[in-house]
Length: 346
Image 1 (cartoon, rainbow, N blue to C red):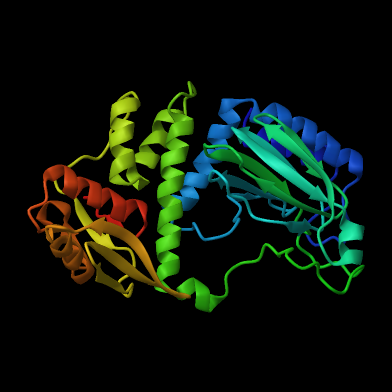
Image 2: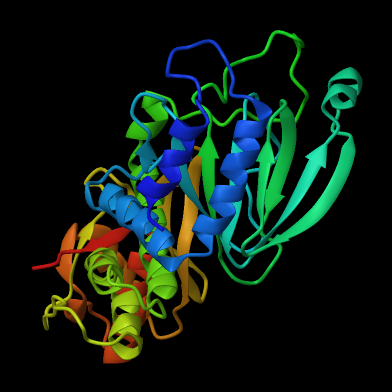
């Protein structure tokens, strides 16, 4: 099954056209849920979705938030993938129109709250809590407040299909429930801050790594090309993992040079000594943050971090301080994984 096969369900069940102030019949959403359960059990379908998500990342359209990789023409129905770190989730939020959620890999815990009672008390009131393992597909039809969380020790991957009307404010309650957030986008000021580019780069590195883990065992025709895309986008550590793990069925870019460029030219980085340690301090919108902290008994780390804070572009093998090759590699990988620097792929 491919993505276009699932999209035929919308035609078969007459979902409202984009701009029409109507919702589909409940039976139509149930039918979509059944079809989605069949789709996510098929690696061809998941690879098809990953190809669109990776294309979005390759075109530098990855932003903080929950952006769709595909929007169905004429209907405005949105398809998005969720990649959830261990212990993380979006927090309690409200859906105001129908949605379908499928767990593709690993598991999620979902907490559902009593919507009317939560509004009445102005605090979240638990309705139910359940665990959703890979392959489970749920749906929302009436407005709902819930909070999915990855309680496991590994990353989880989920597929989300949502109405174009999801997110429209409802008029049945005038005051929001405290701690329930809207799934909105960043303001232009927030999006333009240099550290936001760091966070986006970090998400890109995470996506390339985790999608490579999903694709490596797949026995579908798209997998080698998609794995090559992951390789192109990945940090050096992930590239090394792909080289060791994945079959060499497609050409990958390699090279002896390991050049890093600061993710955003205006990102402020300082090397700040802390006794026998030294921190690489980065300016966030909220203030300074120690991104990397190293022990510095011999002052070797001070020379390396001062060099990193000063140089916008450098070869990892040029890091000073008499660092061993392994120490240089570990520091280069940390800079990439944290999103502070990205590799210049020649």
